Amino acid sequence: MTASLNIALSKGRILDEILPLLGRAGIEPREDPAASRKLILDTNLPDIKLTIIRAADVPTYVQYGAADLGVAGKDVLMESEGDGLYELLDLKLARCRLMVAEPERLAARDDPKSWTRLRIATKYVNITRRHFAAKGIQTDIIKLYGSMELAPLVGLSDRIVDLVSTGQTLKANKLVEVEHIADISAWLVANKASMKMKHKPLTSLVSRLAEIVEQG
Ligand code: ATP
Ligand code: MG
Image 1: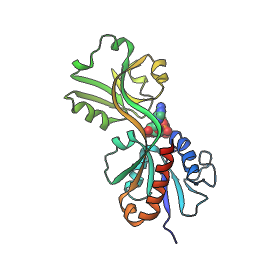
Image 2: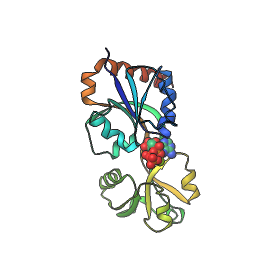
Image 3: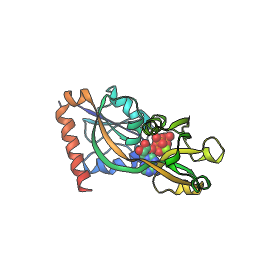
Image 4: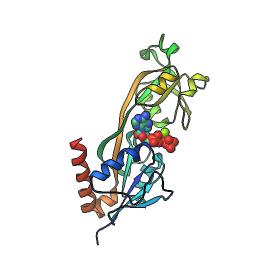
């Protein structure tokens, strides 16, 4: 019997973009994960299952071995405190960038080189603190769980740190990008123990996916 592999994924963007990739690797969920209420889904391969969880929980599941593999945005990996997993493969999916943004009217007279203390709303508290601490800039961080773009409009913060892809949401709220923090894409991560115990099936799946990513 071959060891079974459990892959942790989140609904939404990651799932939408990873399913075609898994399909090209010959892995098809038995039912539509976007529609199903099941949290563990069988696939056409008896030894591969998909676990559907919140995006921010993927590193935790993988770290504790509740999943052998996971797909998580680099933003989520950078923000998570744990280090008990391997970042195996850049899947080059769900690409965007992590940016500092501020209202247009502030940007007109703002110079990032003169920043000494910033009031920032974000869900990326750890990344934001680290990014600015490295530059000697103090931060007052207001933790939010979504709709960061609203914060400067209502005076909750002067600036935000958030993901940007097209820039449409920023534009609609009269915000502009002022500093780039990181380029983001979805990564395949693995539990360290699974890498040892299930080495063969795991590495063979990873190399199959790597080939497909290479082909673009
Ligand atoms: P929820 O929306 O359930 O609160 P979430 O915001 O973490 O959770 P998604 O919006 O599906 O879930 O985002 C999942 C991942 O997709 C992010 O961690 C990021 O890596 C990537 N992502 C988010 N926004 C964008 C975007 N605008 N363009 C491309 N990729 C994105
Ligand atoms: Mg979201």
